[in-house]
Image: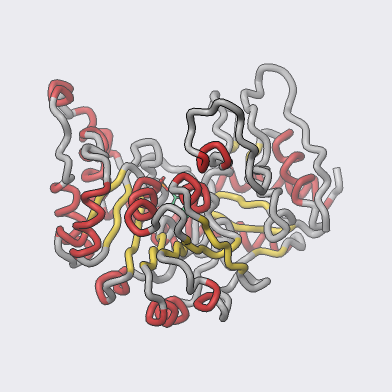
Length: 387
Ligand SMILES: Cc1ncc(COP(=O)(O)O)c(C=O)c1O
C-alpha cells in the first residue's frame, strides 16, 4: 500500500524539529560549476540522521534506538573523578585500558580489538581499509543507511542485495556479492530488527573472498552473537557499540574484534586520537558494571516482548525482533499516516519512506514501560478507534 505523504509538523515553537522522515532521494546529484569538491562528494547524498529534538522534554523519543535508561552510575562517578587537567594531554591513541578489559571480557587478545569513536568510526575504517576507489562493497537491502553513504565518500559503489520478503538472508547473497571486496551485514539487522541465520552467514563467509563485517550494534539484545566467527575466521570482523546496550550514544565508543592481521592494518587507517579521554573513562566504567548492563538489557527485552504482543493484538505485522526496536506494519499499511499522527501527539518513531521495502512500516525503539504504554494508548486511539 502506498503511504500518504501528508504528515504535518506540530505547530509553534514547541516543535524544534526541522527534519521530516527519511526521504533521501535516490540517484546522483548533479555537479555544481566551479566546484572544489571531489566528484564523488558532489554527486552523493549525505546521511540523514534520525530527528534529534533540541528540547528533549515533552517528546517521547522512540526514533533513534537510544537506550531509555541512563548509563551506569559508575559512569557518573568516573566522570566526576576525572581530573580536567588531564585534558591538556592527548588521550591514549591505542585505548589500551578499555581494549584490555574488552579482551578479557570476550576471551581474545588485546591485538584482536580496535576501538572507535562510535561504531560508525569502525565502519569508516573498514570502508577505507578494504574498498578501493571505484571498488564495490555490498550489503543487504533494507539495512543501515550509512553503508552506501560511506561507500560514496570512498568513491565506491555499494551493491544492495534484496532480502527475502520476510527479511531473511537471501540464498543468492553470495552470488550477488561476488564482485565486492567487503560486505557489511548487521546482525540483528536495522531497521528490521531481525537476526539472520548464523549458519547462513558462516556458509556465506566460506565462499566469499573479501572481508565480512558483521555489525553487532544490537547484538546484546539478541539471543546469540557472531563473535566466535571473528575469532575463527581470518576474513570476519565483528563490530560492537556502547551506544545502545550501555546507554552511551552521546559518548561515542565502538569497537571491532578480528584477527590480529586485520586489526593491525585498520590501526594504520584510524584517526590518531579517535577516542577522547573522557569517553575512554566512561566506556571503561560502563563495561565494568556488568550487573547494571545485564539488568538494563533484561528490562528492554521484557518491554520489547510486551510491545510486540500488544501490537500483534492490534492487528500489526511485526518482524521478529532481536534488537532494542521493532519494525511494525499497521493494519492499513499506512505507516506515513501513523508516523505523522504519533508525531502530532509528541511521539517520535522512525519512518523510512523512500524505499518500497520499508515504507509500509515504522521502526519503534523500545523505551521505558511508561513510554511504551503511552505509545500503545496513542496507537489504540489512532488505529483501533480511528481518531
Ligand atoms: C546497524 C547499526 N550499526 C551501527 C550504528 C552506529 O552506532 P554508533 O553509535 O556506535 O556509531 C547504528 C546506529 O544506529 C546502527 O543502527
